[in-house]
Amino acid sequence: MNCLEFRRRLGSEPASTLDSFIAHRAECFGCAAAHSRADEFEARLRRAVSVAVPVNLADRILLAQTTELRQGLRKRRRGFSTLILAAAASIVVAVLALQRPSQQMPALAAMVDAHLHKHVVTASEAQSEVARQDVIDTFAQRGVSLAAVPDGVNFVHKCPAGPYKTVHMVMPQEGIPVSVVYVVDAPPQSRVEFSRDGTYGREVPMGKGTLVMLAASSNGFDSIENAWKSAMDAGVAQNREVKTLFAAKSLPGAASWDWRTRVAAP
Ligand SMILES: [Zn+2]
Ligand SMILES: [Zn+2]
Image 1 (tube, rainbow, N blue to C red):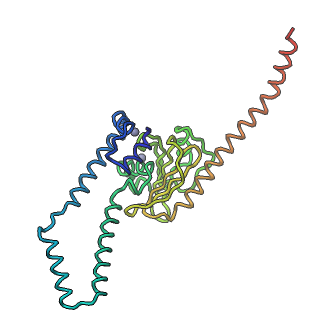
Image 2: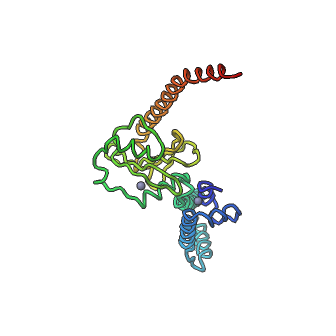
């Protein structure tokens, strides 16, 4: 089991007894920490739900209902209160569901989100655009060659997300800072859009990695995604061109080598 598979299972089944789950927890420090955070969250959830109920609550409800009937209230009204009770119950269920972060956010984005909580980039750090060469160099240090750099990268840093390597950027869009994190070495993800507790996110497979965007609004996601897509495509195109040139140059040499070999052969 790798880290992503572990985090996915942790989201759906925190108390899993699967052998590979337990084995990964024992050998991976990051995932073991995530597991104890999830444990703590489950415990808090249980404490929140276990509200003391008055001993005679059932009797009181029945009494109230009987009284209502005696007072000759219309059937329609009872139907209405049942509806309100059902609505209240579904709100409770919805609130509980919303409080479970890992079920809402894909595993990789959750690792990125956890990093963003630890590594808070201040407004003054992301005040103005960084030099394009800094962005190119940072990606190059992660093994990714860029031919173009999108406008508006105001912060760039090599960072981790769980066990994975990333380039952590901030690209403000219409005054809202968007965290744009390119994860270099995670297994391929599918494209996904999500939101939780006022945080909007999008995960896009791009090049050999994944671009993760997180912000208070998803308004800027399309333009950031398109800008990075063309920057990565340009990088790939340039690599292809270099390869073609090399092949073209090596052809005459290879041909003459063949020729000499043939001549020298008995
Ligand atoms: Zn792990
Ligand atoms: Zn960072």
